[in-house]
Length: 325
Image (tube, rainbow, N blue to C red; front, side, top):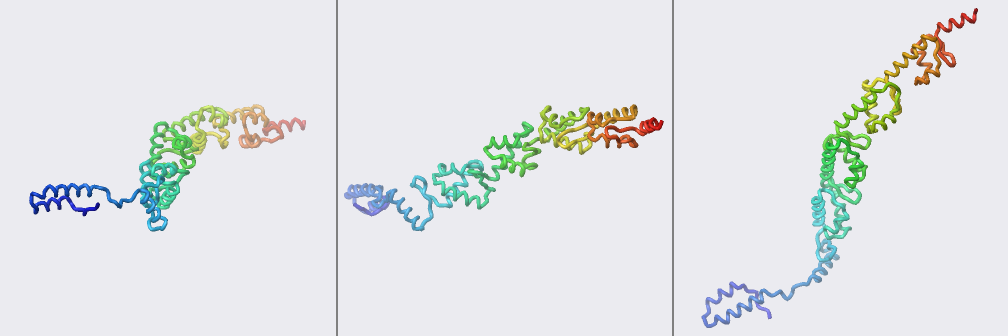
């Protein structure tokens, strides 16, 4: 039975024009009308019907929608873009793409297309690293976190940072290098970050150890014995020597001979030469002189270079006189 969709207010107004005897009948009619209006319509579509209709419209390209994984909901590609962007934001600028299907109830291929579109748009400096998407503001916050941690310990390796944040060392290196001096206040050397105070303390230690030397020393041996950081050690040695703050002879990364040793060596050779008038090359070689011939010629010019020794002119003259006699 179908009655017109009247409002209850209209029925109440009509009762004013009728006599009191018909009131009971009108009230009964009013109650029945209310029940009819509250009843569900006879033409209500079921959920499967709606799903089928939307699916057909989508196949005919009359609407552009994406179905959720349970098939009970659908959304437009534009809405999916917004929702993917919202998830990236809610995760602090870093999210694994493989986690998005479960979060958004949308199949992975649709998610991948949305991510590709966001990457192409370049919003927030978005980039894909492995299976994750990361924003520029996430990388800036990572740099600030590294800077804070570094101030507490003085030294951090990039490998440690990479492991702590589940990123590759190469990627962390690129992030750090682009933010040194801006968000990260440190020195980057040999795959490690150092604060200025750490570098200063390390430099003072290196200078102290090398200044205390009295003879030739192996740099690799000093590095191991004193537990220096390798990158900072060789950098410090080269810098101190070039600035004249470390007097002596530096042989690349192999050895260092302090100037005091060379002075003592020259004095010993000179004393032997003055006393005996002759110095054997082998003796100088044992003292650490690399080129005995050149050393004697430079320190004591006028002498005679023989095959095994260097002889003073006075001794040569005496020998010649003895031969003549």
